[in-house]
Image (cartoon, rainbow, N blue to C red):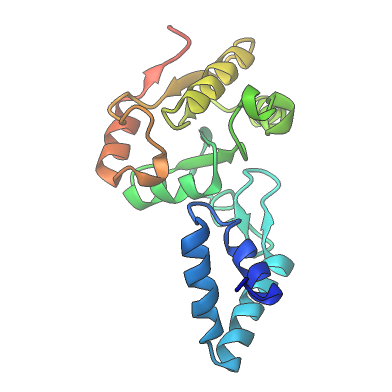
Length: 201
């Protein structure tokens, strides 16, 4: 017997989440069927709340649900140091260490010629404008040590060569091929403290 249409559509929705395969999507769909009407309503309300209230900070790209950005608008942070990450969730990895007190810039993706993602598809031009307009003194490239992350970091390094900004990248204490989301706080802190100058100065 085939799945009824309503469940098939719910399974398809769950499969859009990262790391969710068909079996896990099926389990989630059938678990959802056991929710009470109140729980279903709360689930729908949470999704609707995200749709209506979550937006990107126009400066750093962080997902927020307030008129102000808790990082960009924090005057106690160093506004001349910019840590560049691929994804908004990477910010949380650095914030957990409690050791970085500068600002962030979220690219919203990594360069990937195979997937058709070029410089124009992520926020690289915006990064350069921000560096120039706000007279940023150091850009720390914290792209994951994957092929796509390294390609992105090298492109940005070359793209910013005609500016006076100091460009560094995280030390290679990070496991090769690792996504920052899965690296522990101590390793991130050490790689941040031992960052390397990419301009070779």
